[in-house]
Image 1 (cartoon, rainbow, N blue to C red):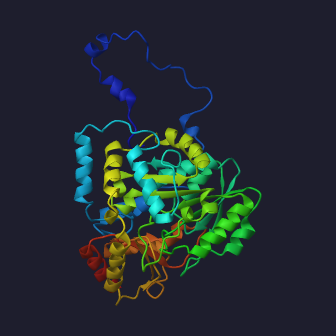
Image 2: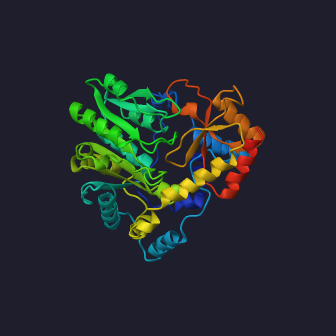
Image 3: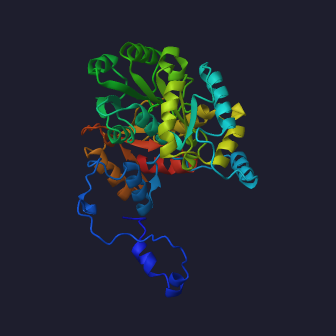
Length: 420
């Protein structure tokens, strides 16, 4: 396995002099007796059907092929120099040790203020906000804390690939409901029909990855009615909250008092400030839920990068640093669509996130996985096949392209797509 240290070889490299100089009286040697119960090869996988993430596969293929990478969702432009300067200053000032488990107080306070202004919900920074190692850790910690053995969790496909494994690793049972193009709208009658006495949680994602669809106010009101009636928790992935277009308001679970009382809302600084590699996010939930989430969080990550948290607290104090993000990415979306206007690819509606789905039905009958591989290897442009976001073998001939890129990158991608 890559990254595994060979301790036996490491020990053999110690010189005789090193050995003689060791004065520790406690023996640290392992027993040489064989384990009579199990062998290392007897491991039974808890995720036998899970391989390497499609994002890793396609990014690696793009690198190997020298292809433009519009597959994995990360920007190719720089983070704010001011934000980087703030991090550097905090490092120089000595803020380099463990942060409090729940997060730096100043960051939780500013998040509370932003939530209040954005969603008109008063949030206690001490008991209702937890800083996590990205949105993915927040999702995992919430599931680990709140989903038990045999609990059912409703998931809407296409879904971000961490949802299903996180549920199964914690003993839950994913219940998949497929959303269909082009709107990828939720049929709430189908949801009601799939609820059982074992339904513990419903997971939503708005703006939605990979489709770019967004939930409406009526969607959230219907979800609130369902959740309150059946006593169901809601885990809301809102990492693209600021990347929403055409003056559509983001409908957070935090805007609806009844829903907020039994929901966990997950957010990501990586998405908001173009710094996905920093892996800093946060979870907002009522105190009883937050108390349980922190029990899991403290043993999964414990705490998150201290100087980055302090810098983010100061950077977020200026609303101009995040309020116009939707306009910025709407320009990116529009530019990308203009570049492919003369191509045979058909764009689907995109109201949020920084992903654009393109249909290639008029170009090829290849499966989307085969099409993505062919496009990467033969035409040097990497994308993500949408079928991998579904539980079953759903084939709609759709590819996902990330437009969080410099215009030069998008222009070259458009040139390639126009040739097909």
